[in-house]
Amino acid sequence: MSEQKVMVLTGASRGIGHATVKRFGAEGWRVLTCSRQAFDPRCPWPGGEENHIQIDLASPDATIAAIARIKEKIGGKLHALVNNAGISPKAPGGGRLSTLDTDLRTWGQVFHVNFFASIVLARGFKDELAAAKGSVVNVTSIAGVRVHPFAGAAYATSKAALAALTREMAHDFGPMGVRVNAIAPGEIETAILSPGTDKIVEKLPMRRLGQPKEVADAIWFLCSDQSSYISGAEIEVNGAQHV
Ligand SMILES: NC(=O)c1ccc[n+]([C@@H]2O[C@H](COP(=O)([O-])OP(=O)(O)OC[C@H]3O[C@@H](n4cnc5c(N)ncnc54)[C@H](OP(=O)(O)O)[C@@H]3O)[C@@H](O)[C@H]2O)c1
Image (tube, rainbow, N blue to C red; front, side, top):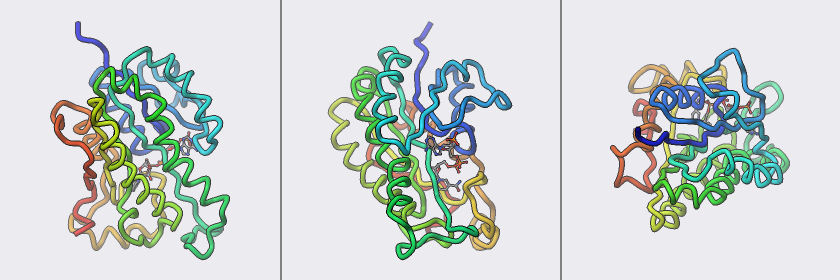
C-alpha cells in the first residue's frame, strides 16, 4: 500500500480552504487544518476533528508555539503546506480601508495572518517538507497586483508581499527539493466577497464568479506530480479578470 500523503492547510473551515480539504480528502490525503474556530461538525470529513488545530494566526506567539504541536501530528513527512487563511478587514459600514485610514493595529493583524504566518509555518516544517520533497502553495490575490474596489490597502500589500515571498521561498527551498508556488484567485464565491461584487462580475470576460472547487483544483495541480518542474510561479484563477 502506498503511504498516505499529509498536508497542512490553514483556513479550512470555509470557502476555498473548505473545498481544498474536500478535494484532498477525496484523494486519500490526511489533511491537518488550522483556524481560529473549533472543528465544525456541521460539515465534517473523515478524520477532520482529530486533525484540526485551533490557532489564531494573527498571534505570532501562538503561531510559533503551535509548530511543535503540528510537527508531532505530521509525524515525519509533509507533502504539502497550503497557506490559505486570509483576512480582508473593512471600515465600519463595510467600506474599503485605504492607505489613509487603515490603523497600524489592523495593518499588523492583516500581515500576521496573510503574510508572516506563511513563512513561520513553512520554515517550521522545512525538514518535514524536504523529507517528502513537498510543495508549498501560497494563496495570494488579484488585489496584490492592482487596486481593487473592495479589498483594502493592507490586504493588497500583504498579498503583494506574499507573491514576493513565494519567489524568495522558491529560491531558498528549491535545493531541498521543495517547490513553492502561489495561486491568485479573482472573484470566488465565498464569504470574503463584498456587496457590489456583481458589478465586477458583469465586466469579467467569463461573466461569472469562480467556485471554490475551481481554486482547489489549481491547488491540487500544484501539489501533484503533474507540476513537478513548476516552482516560483503564480497561477491566476480569475476567469481572465487580469487581462
Ligand atoms: N474569495 C475570493 O474571492 C478570494 C479572492 C482572492 C484571494 N482570496 C484568498 O483566498 C483565501 C481564502 O479565502 P476565502 O474566500 O475562502 O475566505 P473565507 O471564506 O473568509 O475563509 C477564511 C478562512 O481563514 C481562516 N482564518 C481567518 N482568520 C484566521 C486567523 N486569524 N487564524 C487562523 N485562521 C484564520 C478562517 O477560519 P476561522 O474563522 O475558523 O479562523 C477561514 O477558514 C484567502 O487568503 C483570501 O485572501 C479569496
